[in-house]
Length: 462
Image (cartoon, rainbow, N blue to C red; front, side):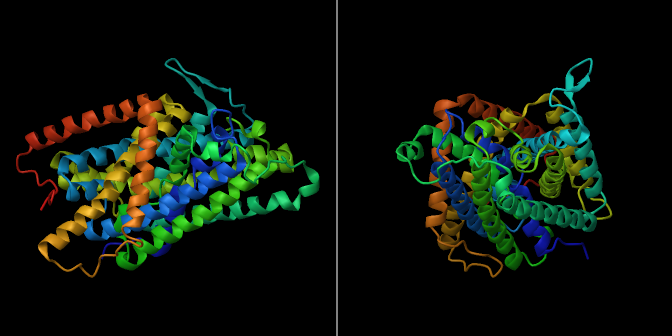
């Protein structure tokens, strides 16, 4: 019998996928003048992000169990709409949803690890084709190490994932307590957390919508366990548990962490900082003790890299099953992990680490993932309509979403608001997203023409 991932691995995948670069970077871009520099508004936006993620998680649980295939949006959109849309989504998942997100996590981990190695952020290797900061060198090492672990198989990858997630959660719990244990050793920021005269204007501003894109990137990953639904023990029971419990835990952690960040450090100290954990730890404990936190923060981010090396290759594996041109992506190791899927994501992530910068990656990921998540959540209405139209009874393995139809409506409304913000203000990211989809359309038709007997997934359009 093939090895399966347990409930704890699935829940830890969700937690580890969510708690990554976003929570340790987003606040640095929210406190600036062009952001939402109001502490109450910032706590509101992180609470709203958690609510939207919970709405998405409960709907995804239903969609995933109705479609009953691994591969996330690739499988869902192929089934709900058309194989072409599913293929585009799978392509985006591999290039953006996982590879770019892994690159961003690895870059952030490299930034956190630099003080431990004694290097400045400006130091690096002057190569013939580019200047390579040491943070990128560390990031590449992390990518190679994590990929090697998951190539060993499901069991080894699951053990590593659980271990790294527990390290991450332990670090965060310590971090939440330390500011109040060392209260006399530093000067708190004095930030006011109650509503101010500008709170209403801030919450209903376009800047709030833009800041929400950063928040939703931080919450991205709430759907992680849907990528392994066919490789999960008892998915009817364990999938919704992992989605909802994992997302709820992270929501509480995010609100508390942002409170602590703003309680300890002023907006000026936090502005534009990519390593907020280092800033706050150094202020409380001093530079020397802060080095310990730098190392542990780096380890905590590695758990997110690991989680995505579990979920991402499963998309590649499903594409390999459906399209013979990509059949090699479905080949598994003796331990049950998709070997070439892992290597493909490793290659793309490494290229992004070398040639991209952190902020562009984050904005690009946020918009692109929002588009396909919105289409997936819309799909729950289509799936229920088909079932009603055919008069079929809901299969026993399906987990119906909580608070239907309110949950999907809230999720869709907030996502459309953010897409509208990008379309009106940062349209270049929208163009980049659409540009990334063009090669997928070409590749899709080339793969069909190369193999007329290709068994692509059924669109099931009723």
